Length: 181
Image (tube, rainbow, N blue to C red; front, side):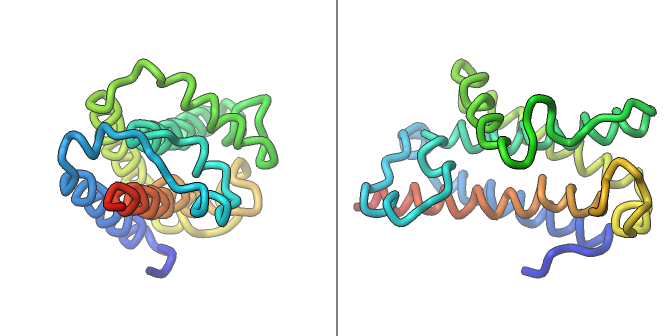
């Protein structure tokens, strides 16, 4: 699927990927949704990405998506209100954000799967509503906002929604596959 480059595509793709995510989750019974991830050693040895070990269950994946929505919302709202803020909160940067993701997992150890689902559904609605407040040019023209640096606001929005949803879908599909073995 091509990366969105217009407001309409951004919203449509985010909604479509979100729907696919929920169709996949809804295809799993409660037991599969609650079962801890158990990827094989052979599978994990082929994967270099930290998330394969970090996220231990469906809740962790959903909370990850929720927290990245919160980063996006907080960053946009703060900068629109004249409070200069980086996308990643201190002390994290693009080299150390993996540690931030680990903190999200720790933060939500007492969050239930049902709560994670509710939080994510609400935050998805919140980010789509935020997207609606921007013009196509504000989202996808470079140098529109100083706080987006060399990127566009839309690029951050795609990363926090449809691209992240695709990542979650792949991970959940692998979980389902591992349960079948």
